[in-house]
Length: 249
Image (tube, rainbow, N blue to C red; front, side, top):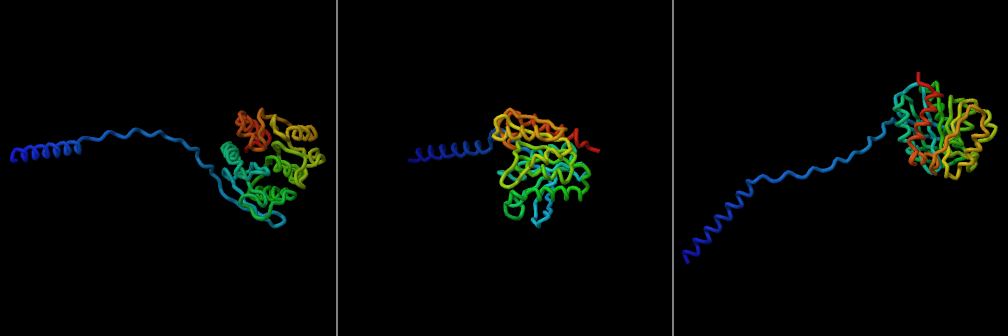
């Protein structure tokens, strides 16, 4: 019996020694985790202004305040956030960039009233000029492009860009006479497989000189063009057009 107890004590002591050694033994370093790169958040300042008929509109200003501004007007099924990447690109090129939500969209007040969104763009132009803009490019996607046409006649910007635009939408009308009356350089942007391609081409043909037409090889509508295979090239061409027609001081 005493002999058995001796063996038990020896076994227990050996086990304790093994555990103590395991505790002292350094643990292997954890495997390195892959680094996930995330795109930096767009940098902008939230701004606000009011339309002539009293609707409070929410906007974002990208880039430092300057004299050369670009105003971006969104399409029907989007809001101003659809311009984030392009606005950041233009701001990086040195422009002051203003995006905004049409009435009833995003953070803006009022109800959606497409027939009167040209008043919202008019208020954006007034805001830009009140804050130092002496040169303007107006860029509109789809319905934002339709609104750009009559506003350009009234406000006389230095250049306009119309993405996948049509002649009218829900009471909002571009107007052939307006296209012919705009003296500023005009860039029309279409997409080969977009439903508005023929309308965009016809409006480009109707517009007065100077004018240009570029066509994406994809089928994106409005700012969706930027997500197509040649989207970056389209952005570069639009940026180059703005740099030619609205040069920085």
